[in-house]
Amino acid sequence: MKKILSFICITIAIIILLEPQTVTTGVKRGIELSIYSVIPALFPFMLLTNYMISHDLCQYISYFFYPFLSKLFCISRNGCFAVLIGFTGGYPMGAKTINDLYERNLISRSEGQYLSTFCNNCSLSFLINYIIYTCLNNRIVMDGILSLDAKGFIALVYLPAVCVGIVNKFFFKKKIISDKTFSHPSKLSPKQTSVIRSSTFSILNLCVYVICFSILVEFINRFDMKNLYKCFIVSLVEITSGCKYTATHLPAEGLKLFIILFVCIFGGLSITFQSISQFKNKSFIKYYIIGKIQTLAIFTILFTILSIS
Image (tube, rainbow, N blue to C red; front, top):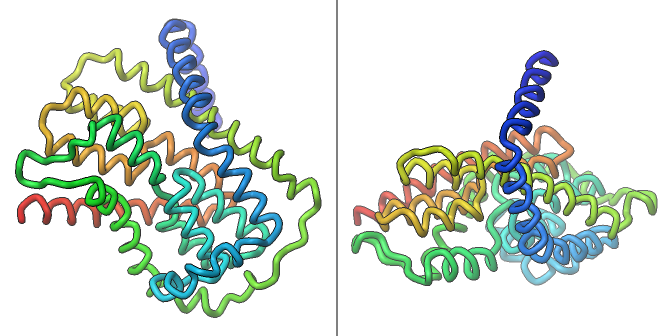
């Protein structure tokens, strides 16, 4: 394994030496995305959620939503907080919240695994402000076969995750009910519960991933290939660049809509690595990947049904 990793590192070093301009352009673009998109969108949210978790405020925040969400999903009051963040805070806040709740013993391991399958999704503000209005210019159609407004577009992004949560609760229900460890919050030292330090470390970690994958996107853009292939590859690598490129370079409205929706649900490789980096428990990573596969499968089925109906 070490030989393989050494070979990969040497190869990357050679590429950096041979293509310094491409790497520099990618780094600059990654820093720009980090400063003007990632940090403004996520850092305030990280500070707020870290503060609420460190001061055991989750169950009070979830008070009004718990009666409904506990029936829809198999979750505790603290788990309800993870659902709210996972569907509103955007990638990778859902993953970070699940991990933080588990590390403080506010949710059980079984509940953390369950939440990992459906509680890390695209943020509502990103969908509305960037995808719908910036990329699609508020024009969401599919070759005259399927016509969606903003609400329909948003529903297609979140509904598959909700379906996964409902389906998977039947597999996790007995484990979650029998596991009561989440009712005893752990006592962490002040160093561990430092809100600012924890938030700063998390956001810097995410920015590094953004920069690395921005470099990869720059190399992909240099290859001469069909627009369809490039749109799909760039979108799978990095959601922000990919959705913009797909919206402007792919004329087929149906295919364009499918790729953008698919990537918003998947998040792209950059988001995937950012999300799994938040999980300290390896089993959470496994169930997160399983959940994403389930979510994408349900979305594909729903999209196909809507297309032919």
